[in-house]
Amino acid sequence: MISIVMVCYNSEKTIKRSIESIIGQDSQEYELIFIDGGSTDGTLDIIASYDISKIVYSKKMMVFMIAMNKGLSVATRQYLLYLNSDDYFTKSNVLSRIQKACLKSPDFIFGDIRYVAGNKVLRRWCSDLSKVSPLYAASRVPHASLTVKRSIMCNLEGFDTKFDFAADFDLIFRLLKSSRDYIYISKELVAMEYGGKTSSGVGCWYKQQFEIYDILVNKHNFGSLNFFYFLINRIIFKIKQFVVTYK
Image 1 (cartoon, rainbow, N blue to C red):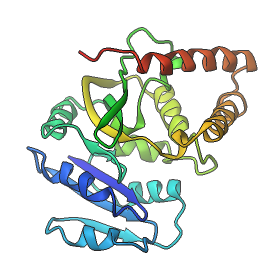
Image 2 (spheres, helix red, strand yellow):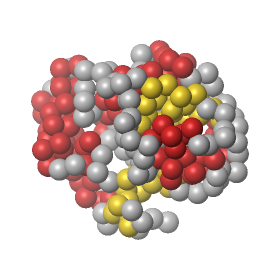
Image 3 (tube, rainbow, N blue to C red):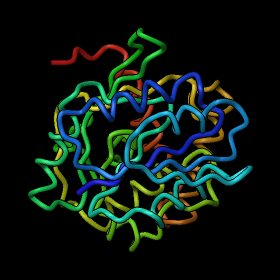
C-alpha cells in the first residue's frame, strides 16, 4: 500500500534510528526504498546490514530534489511517503494509522510533527487546515508527515528541482490547488531532526522565503501584497509552534 522513500547522503550518525523506527512498526506492509547520493561514510554499510526487503539506489553527487524524484520513479505502491534519514516515526503504530487512512482512498494524508535536537523537543507543528484559507494552507502541512497517492505525485511531476529551499512548499501548494481530498491525523507522526537545509540559520531561512516569493508571485501569479500577508501569517504560525501545548 505504501512506498517509504528515504533519501540519504553520509547519514551514518542518524540513519540507523530512522530505519529502526520503520522496521519497528506494528505493520510491515510497506515497500522501503533508499536513494543515496553516493555516501562515502558507513551509510550504505548500515543499510546493507538489515535483512529486510528493500531497494537501494546510489548515485554519486545526486542533487537532493532529483533524488526525491528518483524515489517517485522507482516506487510501486499506491501511496508514497518520504522519511528523511535523520527523521523517524514517533511511535510503533504510525504506519498502521496512515494505512488505515489510506483505506478511505484520499489523495493525501498528513499529521503533526515535532522538531527535535537529539532527545530534546524544540517545537511542535500542529497542522489542522479546517480554519485556514487555501493561500495559507501550504504552510500548515509538514512535508515530513505527508503521504500522497503515487498517481497524484506523478500527475504533479514530483518536485520542481528549480528550487533548493522551498521545493517541498511548492509541491504542497500545487497539491492543495489540485485537491482538497485529504485526511488529517491529529497526532504527532514524525520527529524531525533540527538542522536541515531550511533550519540551518537565518541565511537559509531568507533564501527559502525568496523562493516562496518566486513560487507564489512568479509561478502562481499571486500579487506581491498577497505574499506579504502570507509571510506575516507564516511567521505567526511558526511562533505559535514554540508555545503550543500538544494534546
